[in-house]
Amino acid sequence: MNTPNGDNFGTTGSRYAFTVFTPTYNRAHTLHRAYEGLIAQTFGNFEWLVVDDGSNDNTQDLLAGWEKDADFPIRYFWQENRGKHIAFNVGVHEAKGALFLELDSDDSCVPQALERFKYHWDSIQPEERKYYSAVTALCIDQHGRLVGDLFPSDVIDSDSLEIRYRYKVKGEKWGFHRTEVLKQFLFPESVERTYIPEGLIWNKVARKYKTRFVNEKLRIYWISDRSLVHGQRPEKNAIGGQIQHLTTLNTELNWFRFAPLQFMICAVHYTRFAFHTGTSLKDQWRALTNMPGRLLWGLMLPVGFVIYRLDVNEYARILKEQRRPIRFILSRVLMRSGLSRMLMIKQKGFRLRFYPTSLSASLWIDPTERSGDVEFYRKYLQNGDTVIDVGANIGSLALGAAVCVGDGGKVYAFEAHPVIFRYFQRNVELNNARQIDIHNIAIGNTNGVVWLSDKRDDDQNTVIENKEGVCIKMQKLDDMGIADRVITLMKVDVEGYEIFVLQGAEDILNRTKCVYFESWEQHYQKYHYKTEEVQSFFEKMGFGIFKLVGGKHLVPVQRRHISKECENLLALKNVDEFIKRTGYKIEEY
Image (cartoon, rainbow, N blue to C red; front, side, top):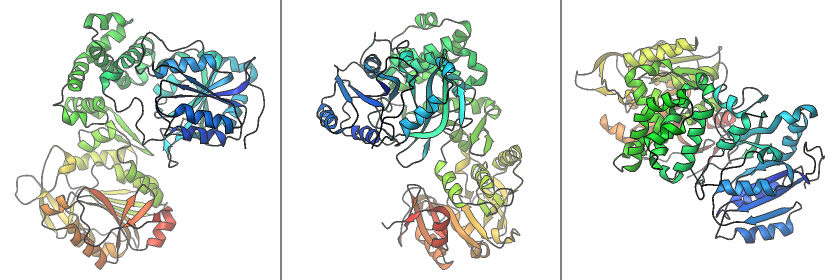
C-alpha cells in the first residue's frame, strides 16, 4: 500500500513529487512490469504518465483497466509514431511532478525506489538544490544481479561526464531529473521515427548541473528482452548516432586525457554513421567545431570507413558475430602495433595487461567475458582455501582465485606455453599476488617432455605428436610436491588433454573437494577418448558430475552424457558441503 510522503519537492507549483514517465511502443506484453513495480511503492506521491508512440496492440486497453484499479493517478497519451525522443518531450511538457523519472516499458523497480530517491534528494541542502538536477542509482537484472559498475563511493556528487570519463563507471543506471531542468534541454524534433540517444540530453545537463550518485539498487532491468534499439542494423539508427558522436567530439574533448580510447571509438562511430546518412567528407569536417576533434576524426577516418563498409557488406560474417565490432577491430590494430601492452584490463580485485593474446583481447573487448567463471569462484572459494589451476593462460582465473582465497590461501598455477607463461608471470607481478605459485610446465600422466603447438591463438595451443612446436617439460601433478591436506578447487582447462592431467593426479584428487573442468567431445576426440571416459574416471575417484545452470542451479549430468559443445562441468565429492558454501540448488533434468 503506498502512502503520500512529504511535499518538499524543490519546485513550486508541482502537484506531485514525482512524475514517473514511461514511453512505449507495442509493449503491452511487458508493460505490466512497470505497473506492478509502481503499485508496490512505499512512497505514494507520484503520477504515472505513459506516452504511447503509436502502438497498435492493446496498450490503451491495459492502461484504461489499470487506471480504474490503481491508487495513484495514471495519465495516458497516444501519438502517431514519431520516435521515443518526441514522446519524451511530450512527457516533459505534460508532467505534473517536480521530479521526472523515466521507467522503461519493459522494466520495473524495487518497492522502496521512490522513497529512496526522495530521501537522497531531501538530503541535499535546500540552498544547494538549485545547482543539482538529478539523483542517479544502480540497476539489477531480473535475477538480482548488479548491472554495470558501482560508483566510486556510496554517495558522490558529480556529473555524468566525470562519472564516465574520470571514474570509468559503465553500465545501466537509473535516476530522475528536475522537470524544470529538462524543459531547458528537450530533444530536437527535426527528425522523426529514428533513435536519438538519451545521452545527448544527459550530457548537456551535466555541463550545467550536478547529480548525486548513490550505490543503491533501485531499478530492475530486464536484460533478455529485445530493446527498441539494440540489435538493429546500424543504418536504422545512423542519424541519432551521428548526432550523438558529433556532439561528443564538439563539446567533451576536455575529458580526452582521462579516456582517449573512448574518444577514438567515438570518432570512428561519427564517421561510420555519417557515411550511413550520406554525409560527405567535407560536411563531416565542417560539422566539427574544434581542431582537436577534426584531427581525431582524420586519424580514425580509415577505421570508420572500414566499419561502414563492413556494415553494408554481408561477407563480413566474422565481424558481424562480434558483440563489440569496433573494439574487436581496435584490439587487432593495438596488438599488431604493440600498443596493446600500454593498456590495462580491469577485473574485480585485480588488473591484467593487454598482452597480444586471444584471451587478453577478449577480456579487453568485454571485461565480463568470463564473468560466469568469476562469479562461481566468488561464491565457492573462501579465505584460506587452496586452489590448483592447470592451464592458467595469462592468469585471469588464477588471479581471480587469489582474490577469493586471500593472503591466507594458496593458488598453484601451471601454464605450459613459455610465451603465455611470461605474460602470466608479469600479470602476477603486476598485482603482487604472492599467494600464487606459478610453474612453466605441462601437466600430464607421465614425467618427461612433450611437444606443444605454437599457434597465434593462445587459447588453441595443444599437445601434439610431431616435433614441430615447442618442447616443454611434462610432469604428473602428483609429483609436483603439493603437500596441502585439502584442495578446495582444481580447475583444468587444457584443450582436450584433461583425461591425462587427471590420470596423473590421483593422489591430488583424493584430497580435492571440487574439480572445475572444460568438457568438449570434439577436443577429447583429438586424443582418442570420449566424455564418457572422463565421467567414469571421476566416478572411480568418488566424484559426481554436475552442470552449473543460470549461475545458481546444479544439474546432475547423466551417464553417457556427451559434451556436444564446449562447456564447463563440476566434479564434486560432497554435494551438501558444496551447496552450503554456495547456496546453489540441485535441479533434475
